[in-house]
Image 1 (cartoon, rainbow, N blue to C red):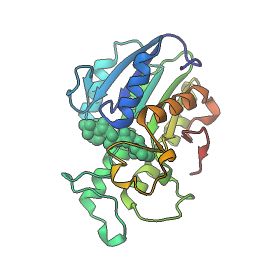
Image 2 (image 1 turned 180 degrees about the vertical axis):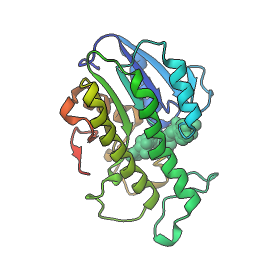
Image 3 (image 1 turned 90 degrees about the vertical axis):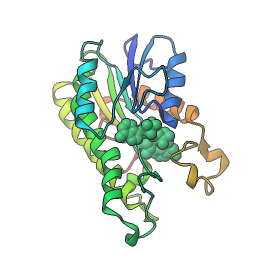
Length: 242
Ligand SMILES: NC(=O)c1ccc[n+]([C@@H]2O[C@H](COP(=O)([O-])OP(=O)(O)OC[C@H]3O[C@@H](n4cnc5c(N)ncnc54)[C@H](OP(=O)(O)O)[C@@H]3O)[C@@H](O)[C@H]2O)c1
């Protein structure tokens, strides 16, 4: 695992409390030559090393300040995201008249502005020698050219914006640090709280466990090269069109 990276690999998982975040942590914890640092919004798990609200710039800046004296990271995975939340009154829209400005802003904050802040503050903590990857969990529905069904205005728009941030950051970062890749990742449909209300239409064999999807994505990250930077790669290694 992570054989294309210098060893030992220092890995930061943001969103460690989520379904996919926990899946990544489980695999990486068991991997040799990996130093794993978990970040979550709350310290509910004793294994969480740092807390961070990615929507709060001061919080992301504070995380970077706390981490700056640690050895540089070979891999940073942002596994946060928001599709629905009853308390926040956020739900994917089926039609234009369901758009709510406050809910839409929250979805954009978590899925697009948060990743931009992570790029801004944590990219400087990536290794300058050897392969280094910052990966943000995206979604196929963020592809504009692949949108056949409509609906889900906020989430689609937020993931499309995230993909543009990933592409733009990849271009900027590569100018000074060609060893650093910035990727978007599509995990497939994964059995987590985020997908739970929408799983009925998914064939059982197409619904991945979090560990399964995390395993596929770690392979994709391992195989990724400089020419992949700025793209959204799916769990099967294919590039998702913009
Ligand atoms: N599951 C799927 O089928 C699927 C498909 C396509 C794409 N994705 C993408 O994959 C990523 C992970 O999804 P998941 O299925 O693992 O979802 P999940 O289980 O709902 O996890 C979401 C994570 O995001 C964290 N989070 C939300 N807002 C945050 C904030 N402001 N600051 C810090 N952390 C915050 C949550 O923290 P708390 O625990 O504190 O709430 C949680 O750790 C998302 O980007 C999602 O869009 C998932």
